[in-house]
Length: 203
Image (cartoon, rainbow, N blue to C red; front, top):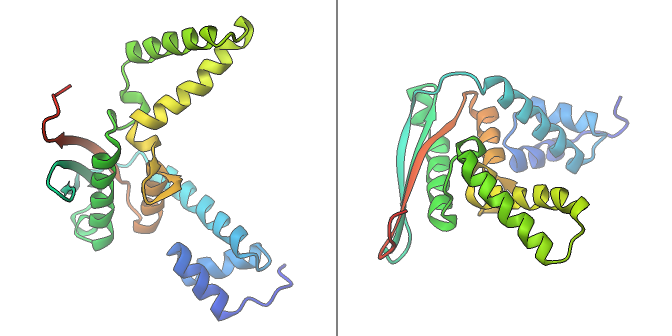
């Protein structure tokens, strides 16, 4: 049991920082014995657990959202899906779609998820990374481990869901989406995206 008195101000502060409900905030603070940072972690883990349960539910509603960068030289379009038209019309869902479109414009990902990266591209990247490691004089027996580590960095650059969110580098786009799944109570899926830059060749 918590030995710390959980005050209304503590609950309000945690709610402002996480968007979780009052009761959830109170319970998390009690579990964390009043430690706000630990309570945030508890709420985050619960949110991700809730999101995982909803991941297989069909998401056939949603929005198509555009972001055009200042100067009208770069733009992006994203289709973000959810389960109901009700959630699709909420300000929070539409803001998420806009933020993801902004992410695409800023970081130019090539794929939505790791599963979308063709196997031949992954194998080609592995060969390049292995050769780089050899050129650096790395011993052969550690090259495979080095390649795996650098491959993670490759995925975090080209895969939208694995990129650090531009507004919070500690959070990936996938984590951001999972937070909204927990908050809005529906599965949320990035269906597709495209990015345009003036004068940039396709492909």
